Image (tube, rainbow, N blue to C red; front, side, top):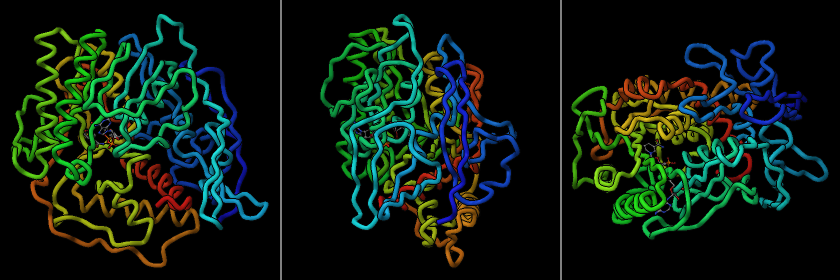
Length: 457
Ligand SMILES: NC(=O)c1ccc[n+]([C@@H]2O[C@H](COP(=O)([O-])OP(=O)(O)OC[C@H]3O[C@@H](n4cnc5c(N)ncnc54)[C@H](O)[C@@H]3O)[C@@H](O)[C@H]2O)c1
């Protein structure tokens, strides 16, 4: 374990978060990243340069009467928080960012491979909104990967957030740092059953999103998409809440048009193994616009393209998590097919910006939210391998030999090309991705390194 270096990090107020907070943090190793410039006191150990080399210290925007700006380091403190290995009386910070400022402080005992939780929690400061501005927001699937980042953002902004989740693919630990907060509530509930609550906005995310999970019980996936969406639209109708559904680029199937515009109707195999998800989301969109036309429900439809980031379920077989974990563990990286199929990947903070803008803006047509930067899977695998090797070198934990990239047979109906046309989001929401894939992979690799060190992976 490299020596610990103490640094003091000042979280500046964005205007959306109360007064400046000082965090005593530490990072391990010498120079964390090469594009780390002098005076970057907010960057912790992850580079914060955007695609055009702009330094990203804040996400969100003050637009459409909804101020969603949050400091990036406040968000990072929620997912890159350290765990501690206790060896006798000595405490070792395995994530390299020093003592956790927020949440309950759990201790991991390496010798016995056990974790001790405390119930005493300190919450991050949240915006003190007047009652007239504070919204009651329901997030279904809020304990999942995307949901948990959305919940962090909405909580920090000072809103009242209720998470509804059956924990099929999500986990309570993704949002446990908010449990006990007066603005937060978590309910174990399956959206296929009706749920009554008074709310102003509904973000409807509940649905397994990765092929192994949505194919595990295909009938349940269709049920979740159809009945879950029906129930949430019924709730929106009754409470007059604005309703946003997270649909997917999978509604385009294996597309014959490239890049995919929202007007494209798609090319989906309705009886293949992916159909439970693809057709489930298509019928969910149909229901959503049915409620809009028939009952005047105020709806928003986000068509999300591949997204990645910390808290992605490491076992859900998605390409980014697979590659990073395989590279970190020194295992062969698996590419399906020849690797010439393309994908575009967006970082989760960009997606959350897009979802919040869509919810609060006026665009009611389906809106693509994704990256338009296209990689072949082979190029991506090589980039991940390089980034992980660099991080391991910086941390002094390099694998003894370079990992290989191996090829396996392509799964059925895997789309060949996928790239978002985001002209609508750009025009209607003034949204476009800011984070580079490199930055995202770095953050995610740090996150999984922590999980591996804690014995969770
Ligand atoms: N991550 C992506 O790249 C991506 C791409 C396109 C669309 N989406 C959509 O975004 C949403 C969130 O995806 P994610 O990546 O966070 O997936 P995830 O699997 O991490 O999260 C889904 C959450 O929904 C919960 N859930 C599933 N079925 C439920 C049910 N019947 N009742 C209550 N809760 C249930 C799960 O427990 C989990 O917490 C999904 O609707 C998905 O279709 C995600």
